[in-house]
Image (cartoon, rainbow, N blue to C red; front, side):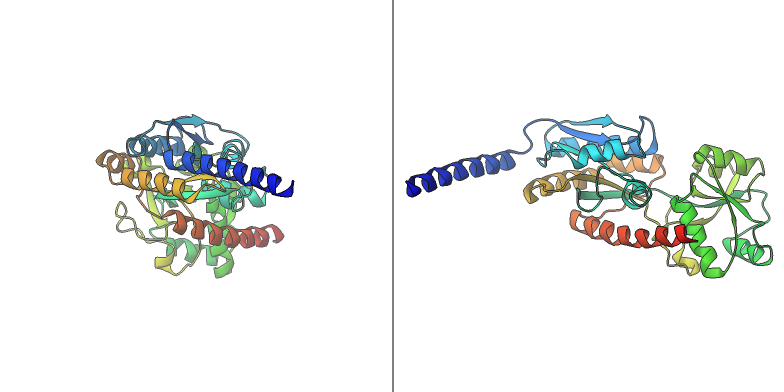
Length: 318
């Protein structure tokens, strides 16, 4: 009797194991859903549609972009995290959803335990900007003024605990300075405040139209490496600040994706990155093409997650 039961169990295991393996081998045999946790027309949405359009040709199946905004990105990101790990639901994961909101809110997903990085394909450009007629010609000018005038320098960001806010406060702590932070609801608001002379500088999203029109001036890039678009603008590291500022644009899936499926997706997106239409689109969006493989992106996210956990804990305690 025991031998019969064991035989049946083995047959069932072999059957389902074979079925799962066949499904992986045939992947993809239907359209892939690409979830964007932002509204249509936003920067993250546009870059997601750009890479998805090119990648679907190499994947051999349509990649359908679906917007699921709301809940500080949690609605869309959690939809990816809880999906079946079969490669048919993937998505764009904003930086804040990985490194900031997990330490500020109770979320239905964990960035490390519930998500699998597939590829990083670019970086957004952030930095410090002043009005073009500002007397501050360099970021060192700002530091020198702040040293002599505690709290008099005001700066705007999109929110408390935003990456820009955290970067400036880390600099202030290192230099023993005090700035006055004014949070706004978004980039358009703090850009308007800068042009109106209500704040001294902004820290965060760059308004490229204002920069190109000569209405604002870029003093510092929040980037890990120099940007060819801004050859004369120093990065944080260039002026001696080893401060993390993740700006990655990446694709993730649920944890548990089979390696073979990860590889197929990664290959499709990597080939898409080399397409002229993608390169042209990234330039038009003022984004920098930066590649990290699935393994490299996973390591980067894991390391940066723990760095920001410490940064935000320290900031909260001040």
